[in-house]
Image 1 (cartoon, rainbow over the protein chains, first blue to last red):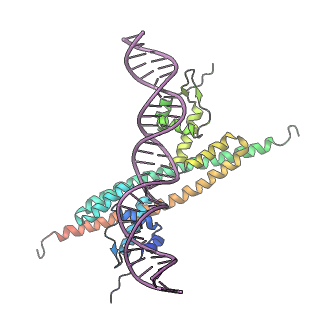
Image 2: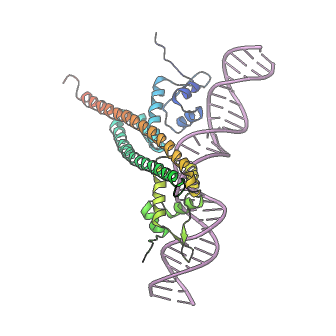
Image 3: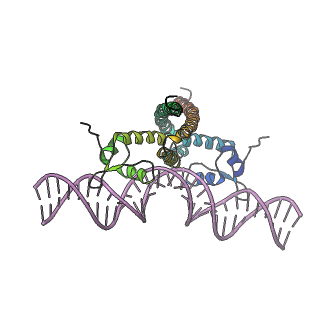
Length: 134
Length: 134
DNA sequence: CTACAACTTTGAGTACACTCTAAGTCAAGG
DNA sequence: CCTTGACTTAGAGTGTACTCAAAGTTGTAG
């Protein structure tokens, strides 16, 4: 017997970290393809959809704009004929994130430098607070 | 003869990559301390201010919210008595960015995996397109 | 003198990504 | 039967960080 596990919007919210509001919003703007409904009209999510959402979350977390994600979702809907284009999008995004990572590391070093600088300044301050000519 | 190099808002915009609008905005909300004025009321920026702006840019680029930057700027205005607190802020921010970096790298790997997956799918597609039983 | 460009101010407008509200439906428990 | 709570919809509202507009001033070039 084959039983597909299904999830309510609440459960998916907990699993994915998105709010119910956001899940409905994502569906409305076309980020999620075809969420099934129960008899009473309530959403029923599958494991597949959850995996989809989790990948979308990674795209978002790496700074992909919603617009671009909409385009990606649209391509997915169009089927395997868009595989190449989707791959190209991911490659392009990969390059952007890689550069962003490089910058973050660079800036992190500057912040580290500033922290040690503040350390030195504080130590100097300690010395100056000792009475002159003591 | 000592001549301090001064810059117009236009020049600073070019150097720092911020627009004139944004430079005024940053000053208004207290991110920039004391920008001098020419006789006609126009802003004149010093090298110091430019360095300040460039550091602020790094904080922004690493995701520090404006609110936090305002607090940082406020502490700076209060003098060396706030050195320790400023250092603490930078340390805390450093930790946040480090974690963010870790996540970015993790997600980047997932994106890479997806790219190779799309590669495989495309290659399978090619094979399938050759006539069956040829 | 006049035109023009570059600045000034305060306050309004925009883009993005949610986030919430209002009004309504539905199923289960008391 | 009635309440409760989780859901539904469409559309309005929010927060963040700019970004622009309008009205006015100033300095220089023709």
